[in-house]
Image (cartoon, rainbow, N blue to C red; front, side, top):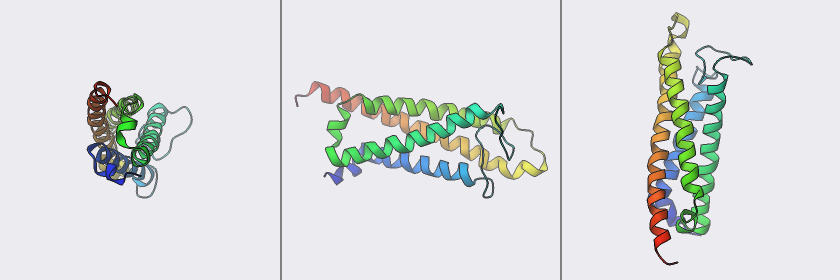
Length: 162
């Protein structure tokens, strides 16, 4: 086991990704004073067929995918070593995919919450809704930086003999 890989640049990216995704999940679940704070609507409930249901599904899928993939990759770094994992294309693929999913979720969430003409009873959620979208975009930026770093590392490893 190679625990020192946790403190590598890639390991730190994975820890940051897991933390941002976990905080975003908690905000999504408890952000409305203990109730759900939705990606796709500013109201307190969603029903099947609501216009924001696609954004809600995208957000939930992006967060869970981010947590599971980043945790698995971090565990793989420890078990097999970072260079064995980064020789494959999967890390760059997952980083790129999750970056796109989070950027889409963040933009749509911010668009939804920023364009909301809030009556008095929903103004308390406005800051949390903006924070939810902003955390998604921050996560997307971190995944993009990790994507670039993993891409460069993979190309360097492909040129070097094993």
